[in-house]
Length: 184
Image 1 (cartoon, one colour):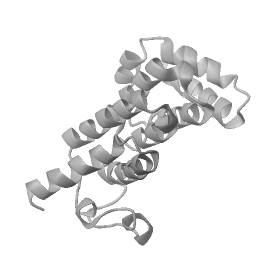
Image 2 (spheres, one colour):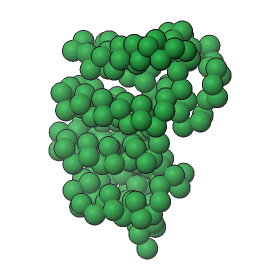
Image 3 (cartoon, rainbow, N blue to C red):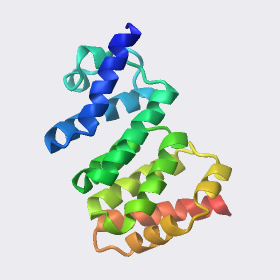
Image 4 (cartoon, helix red, strand yellow):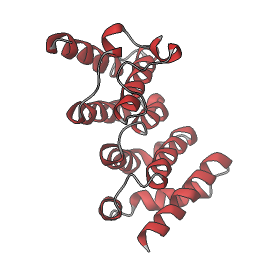
C-alpha cells in the first residue's frame, strides 16, 4: 500500500476517533481496536474474519500498525478520554488492545486524570486491561513498579474493589492481587 494512501486512511480514522459525533467516534474506536489487536499479533496480515472485516474499509484491512502508529493511536485515545466522558469506557477498552508497553502507562494516566469521574463500566474496562497485561506477563516487573510509584491508581483500585458493581469489584481485586504478587 502506498504511503500516501496509508497515511490518508489512518488520518481519517484518527479524525473519526476524535469526532464530536458519538456514533462515528464509537465505530472508529472499534476499527482502531481491531487494528491494535492485529498489531499484538492476534491476527496475521490479511487474516480477518468476515465479522471483523465488515467493520474495516479495504484500506484499513491492509494496514499493519507500526509501534510509532500504535503510540499515536493511544495518544489519540487519550485526547478522546479528556474530551468525551461518554466514551471513556470504550477508550479504555480500546487501550486494552494495545501492547502493555504502550497501553499500561496510558491506562494508568487515564485513571490518574479521570478516576473519580469514571463510570463503573469505564473503571471495569480499565481494570480489565490492567489485569490482562499483568496476568499475561506482558509487563516487566521493573516497569510495573516504576509506573505504579504514583499511588493514585492504587488508591482508586482499592476504592473500586469495594464497589457495589460485582464485576468491577472482582476485577479491581484481581488487579490488586496480581500487583501484590509482582511486587513481592
